[in-house]
Length: 289
Image 1: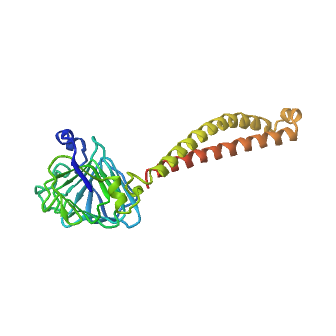
Image 2 (image 1 turned 30 degrees about the vertical axis):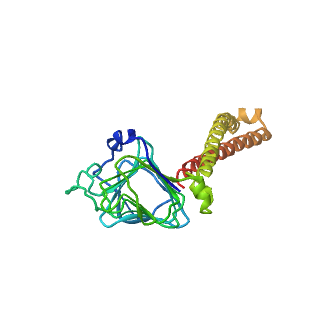
Image 3 (image 1 turned 180 degrees about the horizontal axis):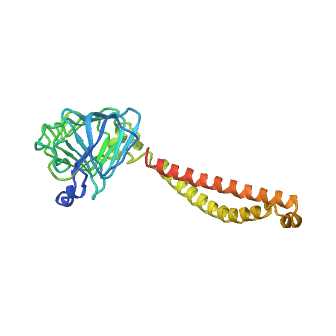
């Protein structure tokens, strides 16, 4: 049996539209297939054409992202969408005319302004947490029941707020949760793993921590080699003096050994710096897929 319930009203009364402030004077325009990670920015995303979560792919939208949709556009989920809002930084799906996020709009936002969010049959495992769907035609129209809302707010949508496999759900303006029980999932023969909040989180976490470790190790090693390089460079420069006094005191072997030490410390410094940079790239990339 499908488990559908309204969450406590506290979030509705505290729903932080004003806290998701964005520079409404400019937009980042998007259309077509979404990247693996859509990061919240200081300005909203303007959706100029239909956007897609491609089949077989996972797309993550970070907390605080605002997507303003042009008329007759929508979001089509054919893979897995993880919209990871939090209580103080919800993710907003709204009209381009929503003056909370586009103060330059000449008209007020209204129901039916944009098409809505469509979860296709292959969109199983999709999860929308602390999201708001505003001023659309359909709200969310799902052709599969294997997704989660935890929770979402639906306001001022036209034809419906939430439709699941052709059935229009009764949804108020209160935060709304939707999920399947373990028994429901098992009864349909679907692996419970498809309803995990984020199937790639383990890989991201491992890459993130590994990246931080490489940064720390590389930084410390580079610092040690930098100190040693300063000494070996001074020693090599001293032995490279071509004055008669220096040439009489020191041998070619000493000069050669000093050069070897200098080159070794320089190579160590470069390699350690490379390790730190590699770790930084890995850490950054962990937020991109």
